[in-house]
Image 1 (cartoon, rainbow, N blue to C red):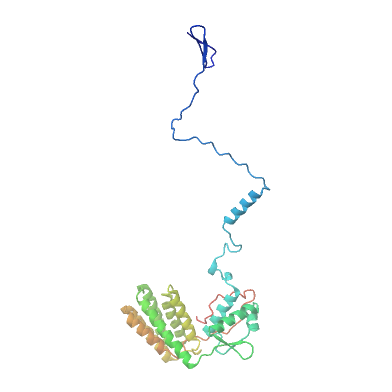
Image 2 (tube, rainbow, N blue to C red; image 1 turned 90 degrees about the vertical axis):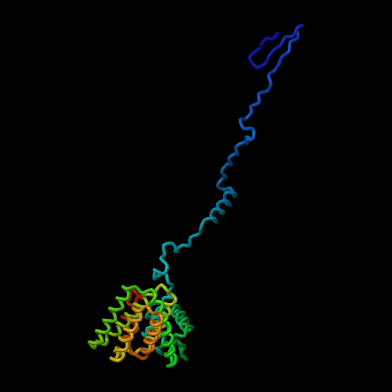
Length: 317
């Protein structure tokens, strides 16, 4: 005989003979749907450290060390396009070097620190550094007394410069021959015609200008060959230091016109061997011809703009 007790899940059983037995229900066990997945307790959230906690200070220091460091004054600069980004000593060196190579500082002319510093409107320290760098390159030589002088090449040195320039110009024209476009060829043609017109009209002073433009145009065609272009420009300026300042004679003008016409013909034929040969003959044949315009004298930069040395100082038109 069985009777139910209070609704607490316990059953009471009365056996024969009056024995009473209480039966408790089995314990309830919940079986997960996926017995392989274990139920892990959620991690306890750590309390934020106090502002004065050393652990927080160390963590902040680590974060700051991991951040990229930006130097002050660097952001926003344009590099080489900004003339002020170049140090003063480099600008002084570049300017003096250009003046020497262009002939505006004549061979043998004395260069004094104090005088140059006043002309450029800067201190003597960058001038001194620039002069020592020019000395190491052989462009100036120290005097027995204080100061330096622009180096004066011997006759053998000058002939060597022309020979070296002939080799470089010949190789450059070989390169140009393989990349010249018809439009560029027409531009050279117009320059040669203007030179011929100046010669026929006895406007000898214009021949130097058209001669310069002809070679400038050729050099522009290989401006992407930076090493070759730099050597060409430098060697050309070296050679022009010793040109005569007077107007060219008719014979020199005639040789210039004939040389440019042969160069143009070789380019039209697209013959690299002929181009190199013709250009070498042109450079070697112009040895001693005074085709360089008279150099402008060295002057002091305008007041209020003393460090603006970026203008062309080669003496060319």
